[in-house]
Length: 352
Image (tube, rainbow, N blue to C red; front, side, top):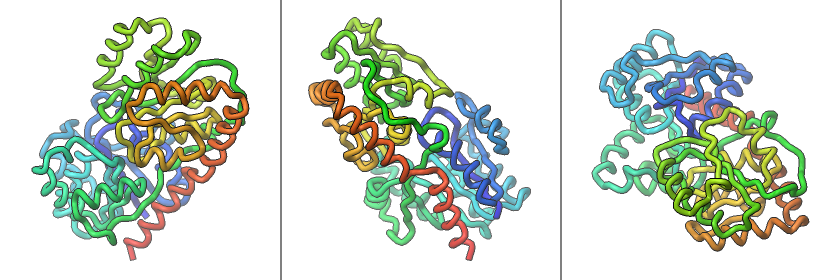
């Protein structure tokens, strides 16, 4: 079986991080897998992919908006005799859905990674999205919430949609249950409208001064977050680390992980924190809350006081240890090997 994953870019995000672990896991299960990246500007993961022996293809235009992408995708499919083409993120989904009309004897699959996006604020995109998703043989949603919202938006058949939860490389992130040592918080997340860094920053102002937080990630809303830190005079307690390829080590060294999101398809960063043994506090939104559940603590979206209360509650050493252990137990059900196996089962079924 020969598979081509296609993704819009390799910027810092859940889909990009997922494929970094998923492709090697699929290869270990005996299938041939390669990756096509439409736009490498702003990439963060290419070297990591190469270290793991993943063959990467790029497009000459190197532009996710280029109409040439559909033709280039088609040529690559024909040249390399791929049997399965698997698209991720909207621009890859669009151009792949068009490329299929030039290569009809291929199985086309896409994964939906989020419960919401900015296109869904404009009904004009509804017709386009209905066309895009209906052009695929199978649509995989990363959570029940993601599937529900996609079906509601596009009206695609329930029979066309399967649910496969994201997985994490337990070998890289797995830690031991731990007791609270300090008040060092961490949030691993890109700076994007889907994330709610401002509530976390405002919570810092109300926490005791021995609490600090490190934000790991980059993105379009970072400057807004930095201005908020300046206005609240929190410079000495808030660190903007930027991109890091040492997330597992950072999580294990931190005392509490925060995942504050306006909407979330799954919550891979929260899962990584749980695997590391670091108690997680997450906003109570669909997708994310389903992953965290009782294994961590959930706070009301945008409610600064509720977040502060949840953070301070972990000063209880018994509760802290309980959530550390619960997170590790929960993470064991989300191995990347299991995720890879489920995708391969879908590939085989579609090839019949």
